[in-house]
Amino acid sequence: MTGPMYRTALFRFDQPISSDTDQAVLQAAQTAERSETVRAVLTASESDIQSELDFIARHICGNAAAERAYAVFVEQLERPRACEAVLAASGETSADDRALLLDHYLVIAHRIAQGFHERIRKYNT
Image 1 (cartoon, rainbow, N blue to C red):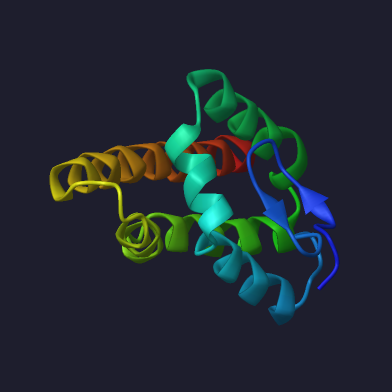
Image 2: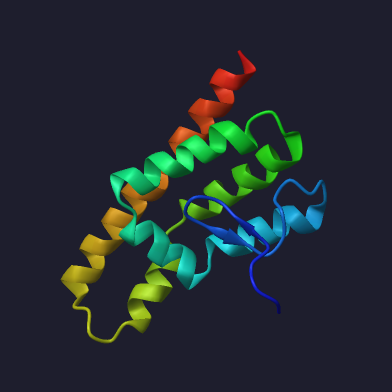
Protein backbone atom coordinates (compact mmCIF):
# COMPACT_ATOMS: atom_id res chain seq x y z
CA MET A 1 0.00 0.00 0.00
CA THR A 2 1.22 3.49 -0.74
CA GLY A 3 1.32 6.35 1.74
CA PRO A 4 -1.76 8.24 2.86
CA MET A 5 -3.44 10.28 0.20
CA TYR A 6 -5.81 12.37 2.31
CA ARG A 7 -5.22 14.01 5.67
CA THR A 8 -7.52 15.81 8.03
CA ALA A 9 -6.17 17.76 11.00
CA LEU A 10 -5.85 14.54 13.05
CA PHE A 11 -6.33 11.56 10.77
CA ARG A 12 -4.93 9.99 7.59
CA PHE A 13 -7.06 8.25 4.99
CA ASP A 14 -5.81 6.19 2.03
CA GLN A 15 -8.10 8.01 -0.39
CA PRO A 16 -10.14 11.20 -0.29
CA ILE A 17 -13.26 10.71 1.78
CA SER A 18 -14.99 13.02 -0.66
CA SER A 19 -14.94 10.23 -3.26
CA ASP A 20 -18.55 9.27 -3.84
CA THR A 21 -17.96 5.53 -3.63
CA ASP A 22 -18.75 2.68 -1.29
CA GLN A 23 -14.99 2.05 -1.19
CA ALA A 24 -14.41 5.49 0.36
CA VAL A 25 -16.99 4.72 3.05
CA LEU A 26 -15.49 1.30 3.76
CA GLN A 27 -12.01 2.79 3.88
CA ALA A 28 -13.19 5.48 6.32
CA ALA A 29 -14.56 2.78 8.63
CA GLN A 30 -11.29 0.85 8.43
CA THR A 31 -9.28 3.99 9.15
CA ALA A 32 -11.14 4.40 12.45
CA GLU A 33 -9.81 1.02 13.58
CA ARG A 34 -6.13 1.62 12.81
CA SER A 35 -3.64 1.84 15.65
CA GLU A 36 -2.38 5.20 14.32
CA THR A 37 -5.94 6.55 14.55
CA VAL A 38 -6.30 5.27 18.11
CA ARG A 39 -3.00 6.93 19.04
CA ALA A 40 -4.11 10.20 17.40
CA VAL A 41 -7.25 10.20 19.54
CA LEU A 42 -5.38 9.27 22.73
CA THR A 43 -2.82 12.04 22.25
CA ALA A 44 -5.13 14.74 20.86
CA SER A 45 -4.83 18.09 22.58
CA GLU A 46 -7.62 20.65 22.81
CA SER A 47 -5.99 22.46 19.90
CA ASP A 48 -5.89 19.24 17.84
CA ILE A 49 -9.57 18.60 18.47
CA GLN A 50 -10.47 22.16 17.53
CA SER A 51 -8.37 21.90 14.37
CA GLU A 52 -10.23 18.72 13.39
CA LEU A 53 -13.60 20.39 14.01
CA ASP A 54 -12.50 23.42 11.98
CA PHE A 55 -11.42 21.08 9.18
CA ILE A 56 -14.85 19.45 9.27
CA ALA A 57 -16.58 22.82 9.00
CA ARG A 58 -14.40 23.90 6.06
CA HIS A 59 -13.96 20.69 4.07
CA ILE A 60 -16.61 18.15 5.05
CA CYS A 61 -19.79 20.16 5.54
CA GLY A 62 -21.68 20.61 2.30
CA ASN A 63 -20.01 17.70 0.54
CA ALA A 64 -22.54 14.84 0.71
CA ALA A 65 -19.98 12.13 -0.06
CA ALA A 66 -17.52 13.42 2.54
CA GLU A 67 -20.30 13.79 5.12
CA ARG A 68 -21.37 10.19 4.50
CA ALA A 69 -17.84 8.79 4.81
CA TYR A 70 -16.95 10.89 7.85
CA ALA A 71 -20.23 9.89 9.57
CA VAL A 72 -19.23 6.24 9.20
CA PHE A 73 -15.72 7.11 10.40
CA VAL A 74 -16.92 8.75 13.63
CA GLU A 75 -19.46 5.98 14.23
CA GLN A 76 -16.61 3.46 14.16
CA LEU A 77 -14.35 5.80 16.11
CA GLU A 78 -16.78 5.79 19.03
CA ARG A 79 -16.67 2.00 19.29
CA PRO A 80 -14.09 0.83 21.82
CA ARG A 81 -12.90 -2.29 19.94
CA ALA A 82 -9.89 -0.75 18.19
CA CYS A 83 -8.70 1.10 21.27
CA GLU A 84 -9.08 -2.02 23.41
CA ALA A 85 -6.98 -3.99 20.92
CA VAL A 86 -4.22 -1.36 20.83
CA LEU A 87 -4.13 -1.12 24.61
CA ALA A 88 -4.16 -4.91 25.05
CA ALA A 89 -1.17 -5.20 22.70
CA SER A 90 0.77 -2.86 24.96
CA GLY A 91 2.27 -5.26 27.50
CA GLU A 92 3.63 -2.53 29.76
CA THR A 93 0.23 -0.99 30.56
CA SER A 94 -1.58 -2.15 33.67
CA ALA A 95 -5.27 -3.07 33.59
CA ASP A 96 -6.12 0.07 35.57
CA ASP A 97 -4.15 2.27 33.17
CA ARG A 98 -5.80 0.58 30.18
CA ALA A 99 -9.23 1.30 31.67
CA LEU A 100 -8.32 4.97 32.21
CA LEU A 101 -6.90 5.29 28.68
CA LEU A 102 -9.99 3.64 27.21
CA ASP A 103 -12.22 6.09 29.08
CA HIS A 104 -10.11 8.99 27.82
CA TYR A 105 -10.26 7.64 24.26
CA LEU A 106 -14.04 7.32 24.38
CA VAL A 107 -14.46 10.87 25.70
CA ILE A 108 -12.28 12.33 22.92
CA ALA A 109 -13.89 10.16 20.21
CA HIS A 110 -17.33 11.28 21.40
CA ARG A 111 -16.29 14.95 21.36
CA ILE A 112 -15.10 14.61 17.77
CA ALA A 113 -18.27 12.75 16.73
CA GLN A 114 -20.52 15.22 18.53
CA GLY A 115 -18.65 18.17 17.01
CA PHE A 116 -19.01 16.62 13.55
CA HIS A 117 -22.77 16.17 13.96
CA GLU A 118 -23.19 19.69 15.38
CA ARG A 119 -21.35 21.24 12.44
CA ILE A 120 -23.38 19.25 9.91
CA ARG A 121 -26.58 20.33 11.65
CA LYS A 122 -25.49 24.00 11.67
CA TYR A 123 -24.47 23.83 8.01
CA ASN A 124 -27.84 22.39 7.02
CA THR A 125 -29.93 25.00 8.85
